[in-house]
Amino acid sequence: MAKKPKGSAHPSRTRKGSTRDVKVERVGRVTIYKRGTAYYLCYRENGQTQRPKVDGNLAVARETAAKVLAALEEERPSPLTFHRTTPAELVAQYLDYAATVQCLAWRTLDRYRAALSHFCEFCEEAKVPKIDAVTVATVEDFVRFLRGQTRTRNGHQNGKRRQYKLTGIKFILGACKTAFNWAYQRRMLPPYASNPFSDFKCSALRDSETVDKEVRIFTAQQEQDFFAACSEWQRGLFLPLAQLGVRAGELTHLLISDVDLDSRVIHIRSKPEMLWRVKTRRRRVLPLVDTLRVLFEKLIAGRKVGFVIQNRAFAAGTQQPARQFKSDREFRQHLARLLDAQHESNPLAQERDLRKAAMKYCRTIGQVPIARLRLEFCDLTKAIGCPEFTRVHDLRHLFTSRAIPAPLPAGSQGWRYD
Image (cartoon, rainbow, N blue to C red; front, side, top):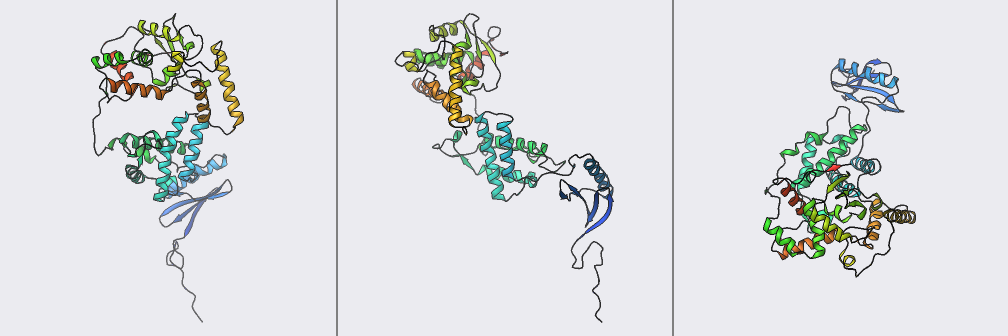
């Protein structure tokens, strides 16, 4: 008679020598198993069987099982349960949250989308299936991946492609860190797991060729030459930038209703009807010095409605606005109706599309494009022999540099918020 094959010498081994689960004890609806030297829990939650691993000995497993049982009895999510998520799912859900809940500006969403798309591309290439598999070592590989990527400045289709600078890499890592924090709050990562992008030290990153860049500021002579070369219309563009320190977009969106010549102040605020927002989304009031008060009186020239700074053809009178408005309220209501009609004709239109429609209409009533400021600024700096100055934002630095060593009158330096 043939002998029966003997079983495994070890109770946690099968006859073929494979490791098997050994039931240790049961805590209510939660069962503790031992597999090799590690402990696991087994329980049903939301119709699915969960088998999370417990880091620790049997005492830790018993304590954890009691916590899980308490959560199940109270119909709370188990402290060990999380939803395994792919990188593509994380990016899609986080961008939807940023757009529909946070309501971030569409340009900000574009930057986040571009940054996170690099993460998805890397995970696909490195075969990272789920975000809970991302570690600090994975982040290091991601940085190596980014250093080999090229991009055009501001995403321009026809621009020259260059490698990412250190600031660009840090922005991408920061966007990923924010997305992972959001994922952790929504139980997409293991409990008590740390954010690998937080653990990675961005401060230790360096560029291969570090060049100290100083902020370029006009000297007194260059400033004098610049404004001497300005035409009357160009002076209206650049003098407020230099003396108020406002941003280019804030100046081109400044309405006559934002200027109070009697109180000698201007109001910088968002324009929801144009789908344009101040960068900080905070309203502020700036004082008008005598020079700017006289300039604004000349620019407004008795008009009641419209933009303070008009495009060259409108300022010269060779082109008339597409429509005349009796009040600022009428102008805003007309613009709101125009955007509503645009949305009705195209229900799938995004904020970007509506913003373009608003900009297109504002051009017909005299608004100056921001690109026109840049072109005029570069033409002037070339004319005075300073072609290295290429950013209109340099005039904002000029205001700051003048305000610090030589204090301005009260209320001129700081912002007053309403």
